[in-house]
Length: 104
Image 1 (cartoon, rainbow, N blue to C red):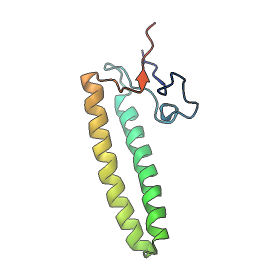
Image 2 (cartoon, rainbow, N blue to C red; image 1 turned 90 degrees about the vertical axis):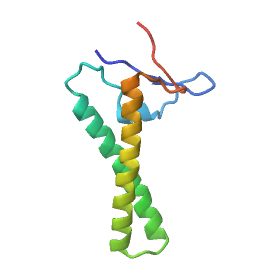
Image 3 (cartoon, rainbow, N blue to C red; image 1 turned 45 degrees about the horizontal axis):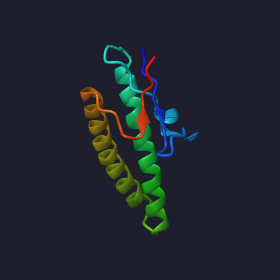
């Protein structure tokens, strides 16, 4: 069974463009789909980071090959740090201050 998380703004209203829609909710600890969940989350963060860094490097006027190398390396580092910290928080059972897990 999966926990459903709702991202709630400080005003108490749910945001319609919540990132939870994009990255999914945390899987239960006994789910066989954990690997797929964390791989999907890593690839999403990597792709977003790569795109943002690639655009920034291109706008600064760097050569395409230099921009690709820079974007790929730093997107990999950023996604790895994000994934490790998110996995650790999930493993410990920590909840973010912005998200509420409704009880059923």
